Length: 55
Image 1 (cartoon, one colour):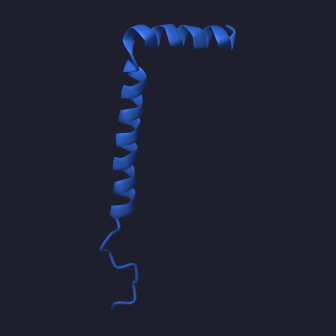
Image 2 (image 1 turned 90 degrees about the vertical axis):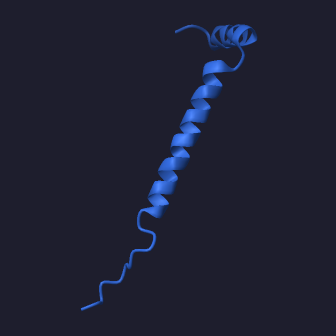
């Protein structure tokens, strides 16, 4: 396994040339998918009656 400082230096050199690129894209996609999933989990039972005492 390469030294972590070598990996950090390589990442820093890449980001100088290309900008945040794939990291920012990944963070945005994961954040949006997480928000959609959270909304689905919270809203899937919204408006349903949880009490089964109706006969």
